[in-house]
Structures are given as structure tokens and as C-alpha cells.
Length: 111
Image 1 (cartoon, rainbow, N blue to C red):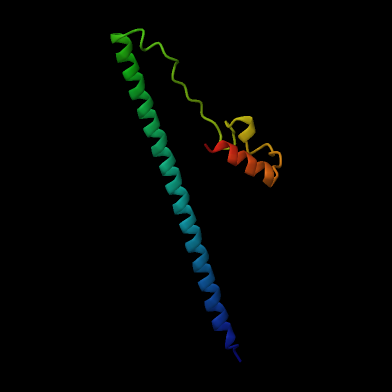
Image 2 (cartoon, one colour):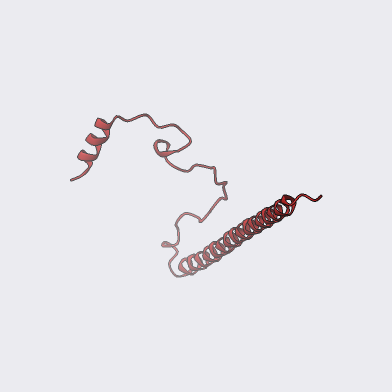
């Protein structure tokens, strides 16, 4: 005789598989959208940098003394690179502050 619970277990297994595939598909769509946004933002930054260089060249032609600013340079870095000052860097543990010191610091900073 056939097991009557086999059909229910098989349906549950199929439903779990469908949900899993839907979640995977949603994950890939979200990742693709994130990569697309990153690419478009990088393209916008490049266009702005080119526009800035054109404006700098135009200013240099009209007024050489005004365009003698620092050169525009932007280095690409990883997300993990910290550019914060040493006292605000999250990679270094902060010194513990007592509640009295915190309250004293906040009361003296307000005018």
C-alpha cells in the first residue's frame, strides 16, 4: 500500500524548492542592480571630473593665476580602507569613556 503522507511531503519539498529558487533569483537581481548603480555612479563621477578639467583649462586660459590650484586626483580604494582620522577610525578600538566623562564633555561643548 502507498503511503498517503508521501504526497504531502513531496508537495512540501517542491514548495521549498520553489521558494529557494525565488530567493536565489531575487538575490541575483539585487546584486545586479547594485552593480548597475555602482557602474552608473562611477560614470557620472568620470563625467564630472572631465567637466571640471575642461572648466579648469578654460579658467587657465582666461586667468592663469586662478587656475594654479592643486591637480585633481582620485585614487580608487577598497571599502575596507579607512580614511578617518585616527581618533575616529573604527578599526582601532576606542578608549572606554565613563558616563561622567561623557556628560561632562557634552555639557562643556554646548554654548
